Image 1 (cartoon, rainbow, N blue to C red):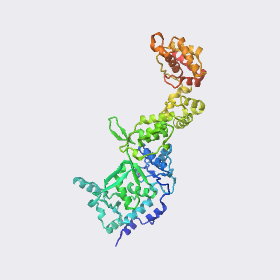
Image 2 (image 1 turned 135 degrees about the horizontal axis):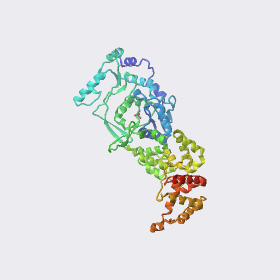
Image 3 (image 1 turned 45 degrees about the horizontal axis):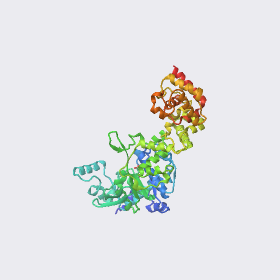
Image 4 (image 1 turned 90 degrees about the vertical axis):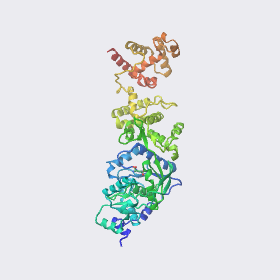
Length: 554
Ligand code: GLU
């Protein structure tokens, strides 16, 4: 008589190991009480999406808070979704965002840690062993149904308004005799391996989702596919085996997996594995122009790709701070009260996660980034700017390296003080804001004149200023001289008085300062003009004014 064991041996003749061997090879981890082991388990489909970066951030944060382990596993069993250099792309994204892994995949060909391999296609023997075990123990069976047969089942279910799926009396191959299954495999028929689900749809299963609280679902009674006809496991099977053997305690994943959790819990039970805790994270959403909320899409939204932030020079830390505000509703308030602290100082709480997902708001992200950059030291901004420019603007990179100290002084304008200036939301916009500090970049065709725009008057103001009032020895002297110039030319140096009797003056000290500012920088809005002038120095200012006069006289 043919037994399940014979069938299992026919299906997996080369598998000699048993689950016991793997239990021994991957023992329970010795970690402090309460330590969380979690992982990031992306498919290598190109780049990390903002939604998955959020998952990775949280999955890395919780072990950090609890002295646990965070590892990276690559789920590459779906050959169709794979792209070239997909693994490296993921690793690069994690490195760029400074999300450190304790274990797992560190490059296309390297791994670290004792619970590997961490790339699913390298784990075939393990999956085979467990599939063999399940066949042997009558927990799974081969299914020979063709596409056509499955379609017929579905049609019938639709017609009779029955639940769709391969279950109960619809699960034809579940009832094949072992002899027949054996014979058909021997004959070379194609088959998949299905779970022999012990579930009853009319009964309920409960579990506690860390984000959503108590969840109640019908028990799974569908004989889901565990192993495809090419011998590759599907997600359900690989997830349960991998996370058991890697001793994951917490599964953080997207909410799209919530409805499959009953299948996973059933599998954990059938294999006598201890089930992990689950946290299903809400989607990262976007509002379309027509007001509809939808998932932030890898395909449609450029801001969904993490490379978008890298290219624009938005500091990774700022992106992480923003994502953390999406992850924990109390983070923003905490950050406002602890402006000099970072994510590491904050304790993450699953209860403060939104169940309904979060709305992605690039403006808010830029605002957080602006605040973040404003609090950096001049050296830190310089480093960030150099790193960005080296990759994306070589000419500017060479300039800021050549004039390093000068650039540091520029970046330090209104920085390193209680209320620093919040000019830059990203490194890519710094050049356009400070170009006028570099003669190599300064060749304006457009001057943003204010109230005084008449050529003769502008030239007159500049001439008198340079001849009699130029002084950058200190800020008070500088400003007093500008006030003297103002009075001398019939403008009001006292703003209060000017407001009371505007008709008695040609304008105010603000107008005069604007002329100087625009004449020197071409811009009507700049940081502290005194520092700008001091850094430029008299000679360069003179050259600029000469150039301006030539342009105005044309
Ligand atoms: N590879 C799965 C995905 O990309 C991972 C889900 C999980 O974390 O278990 O959706």
